[in-house]
Length: 229
Length: 229
DNA sequence: ACTGTTAATATACACTGTTTATTGATTCAT
DNA sequence: ATGAATCAATAAACAGTGTATATTAACAGT
Image (cartoon, rainbow over all chains, first blue to last red):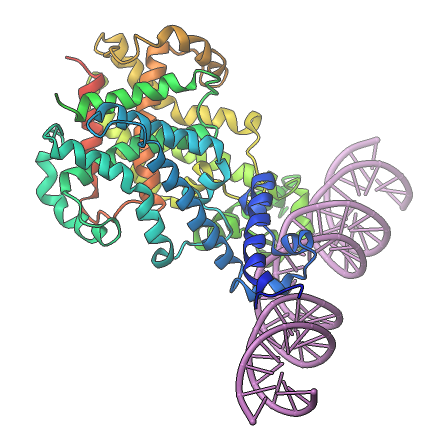
């Protein structure tokens, strides 16, 4: 009468493993992740983990998928309070959310956008979907601008013919996207990522409290170039 | 009469260690670097390495400094054939050199711009100088544009007062730089790095042979925004 | 020729991911 | 209700890692 569920601690343990993995990652960084250390903290033997994850890489993959989900949720949520036709502020909001999430969950950010573990390469077939989903909000912001007829195609027009083909295969992951939208979204992502990546990795000076200002300047440059009135 | 130098194989071994380290990094990636594997390949015992490097992190630091040097050399060399007043082509050349170097020496790139080794954090006091030297060519390109009176300060003017202070402490590493130059150079670096970083980490579609075109478009956007005639 | 230095070794410790065989408890079918 | 089957967890072991210690061996300088 005490325990009724058939496998109560099974999925519990799976989640507990991931939870303590996140805990240790947050504390010591992703590459220091150790199955034995996780087991120790859970009062478990290390091989027991192999009942829930094929090997350490599989655990890392699961963590990466979780990180992408967390990232995608934060991207999506940033748009909730902005009017659908307030394109400039949507770009600002989703851009700021990118940087804020990276600073708040630095280790998740590094897990996704750095090389997290010795010899690990993310299996695209598993990580692809959650990865694609996480950048979809940005694509939708840009697509809405394009549909509203306010997307500047000046920069893309000259090279569009050559790149429609290159984007084609990528759409298997991101879904059907207009090439111009694809180009602009990629450019925005690239600029936003460049700033945040250099910042997170310590290649930029520490901006302190008003670190937003410089970043917002870059977001404004994006709007000046791609958002026509 | 055979050996005259006092410590002939000392620096030889130091270089050999780094050389085989690079060899293994190029083959298996930076995080798989193993002192024992290096020793094995050199027909040496692992502890012998400790005579040349305090520990594995010290070896990694040395490799990072070498990587920065290689990177800085490539940045500098890209400008050799471009006329000093051909500012547009200088931006193009140094930007393309950035991407080409990253593709040619991917592991060196990751060593610098990713989190290479479990628990490793680059000691700024050692890495700083070579790091600063490696981006100096970009700063000089931008500074030349500013001195020629062709640097557009529109984006920076509103936030300059707030950021002169933040840049101040950074100049201990990069040397004396005009704030506007600093801002524009950082922005260019950020954009260039964002593109290449996402590309190298596999978050961008593979662009194939004409991968330059999309990247050149981004370089042209930079010129349109910051290089006034 | 002796001494001091120092590079290299051998050995050992504590850690890692992973495999194997074994235990023990739970569930299912008869 | 009892026997069979399943499966999570363990114990033990293997191969690998970085690193500390003590020891050997070769060299340089006086």
